[in-house]
Amino acid sequence: MKSITSYEFGQSFGITSRKILEQYLYAVWNSHYSYEEESAISKNITENIQSRQGILRFDGNTARARNFIGFIQTEHESIEIYPKVFREADMEKRMMLQHLFYWFDYCRKWKFPFTNVNLSDLQDVDLPELIINLIASQLYEVISTNPISLYQDMEEAMSKPKGSLNFSRYISNSMANGNFHMLECDHQPMEYDNRLNRTIKYVARLLLSKTRFHETRQKLDDIIFLLDEVEDQVCNTTFLDNIPISPFYQEYQTTIGLCRMVLEQHIYNHHYEDSKHWSLLLPMEYVFEDFIAGFLERHFSEDWEVKYQKSEMYLTDQQIFQMQHDIFLTSKKYRKAKIILDTKYKLRGSFKNDKKRGIAQSDLYQMTSYAFRRGINNVVLLYPNQSDSINSPDVFHISEPSLSQVIKVTAVEIPFWSSTGHHNIHSQLYSTLNSLLSNFS
Image (cartoon, one colour):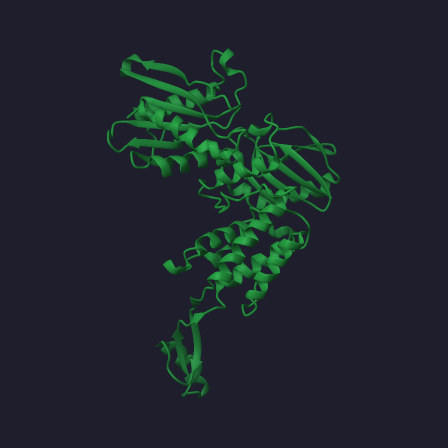
C-alpha cells in the first residue's frame, strides 16, 4: 500500500485509481458532509454542496487536499492530511498528532480521550492504525475492568406474574388462544446482553476488519471474546440514544462517544463495509472554532458567559438574513461588556506589510454589520499563529457619527500550535486571551 502524507491545500500527489477513490469520496460526502451547514464545512466554498465532494480536488491522476484533515485509506493508498499550520514547520508526525489530540480535547463534536497519549515510543506513526489502536485500548479497558449490565424492556408471556401485567396483550394473545394461564408481563431485568454492549461488539468487529497490526487485532479479538454472551447485531447510532448510565459507570460516556463517532462515519462509511475503504475526515475550520470556544468555556466561564454559534437575531427588520456569531461573550460582572469573537482559520502571510493586515474585506463587512445590528462596540478576529513568534494585535476603528457608535475591530494572532510541543500552548493561549479580555471587562 502506498503511503502519502500531505497538508491542507498542499502539494498535489499521485494516486493509483482516481475513479475508485473519487466514487468513495462522493459516497462519504453525500452520506455525511452534504447534510452539514455549509459554513461548518468551509466558509470559502460557495458551490452547491449537493453536487460535488469537497474533500480532494482532482487533476488527471493527481489529487490535492482541500480543507479537511485526517486520513483516507483505500486498497491502494493510505493518505494522511495534516493542518496547513504545520506545512512550513517541518514537525515530526507524532508531534502533529499530539497537537491534534490536544485540540480535540476541547472540541464538543469529537471526543478523543487521548490528550495524554505518549507517542514517543512509536517508531512509525500511522494515523489510521493509531486511531484504531487507541479506540481499541479504550474499549478494552472499560469493558474488562467494569462490565456493564443495563435494564432492558422485556415483553414476555409467563406463568407467574413479573413486573406489570399487560391486559391488552393478555386478551389478544393468551385468552384468544385459550392459554389463560400465560400472563403477558412487561418487566425490566438487568441484562449483560444489552444494546450498549451489542454496539461495542459491533464496533470492535468493524475496526477488526480495518486494522493490520497484530497488537491491535489481538485487543479487538479480546473485546469480542469478553462480549461472547452478547448477541451479534448490526448497530447504528440510534442504539446509543437515551442509554441511562449510572454514576458508577461514568467511564462509559466516553465509550459511547467513541462508538458514536465510528457509527456516524467519521472513521467509517457504511457504503463500503466490505471493502478496504475507510476514513476519518474533519473540517479544520470547525476544529479551530470549536477548540477556541471550548478553551474559553473551560477556563474563562467564571467571568464570561460563552455562547457558541449564537443566532437568535436577524440582520434585517423582516427577520431574514439570520446572524450567526462563532462565539459571543458577555461579561458576568459588567453585563454591558459584550464581544463578538470570530475565528478565522487563515494564514495571512506577511500581513504586517499590508495596510489591511491580511483581513478579508468581506470579513470586516460582515462583522461590522453584526456589531451595528447588536449595538456592540467590540469585535475580535482570531487567527492561528504562523510561527512560534506571535505577532502583535492590529486594531481598526469604524465610526458611525449618526449613531454615536465607534466599533473597535481587533485582529489577534493566538498560540494554536508550537514547534516545541503542544504542552506549551496552554499557558501561552491562556495568557493571550486573558490579556485580550481584560481590555474589555
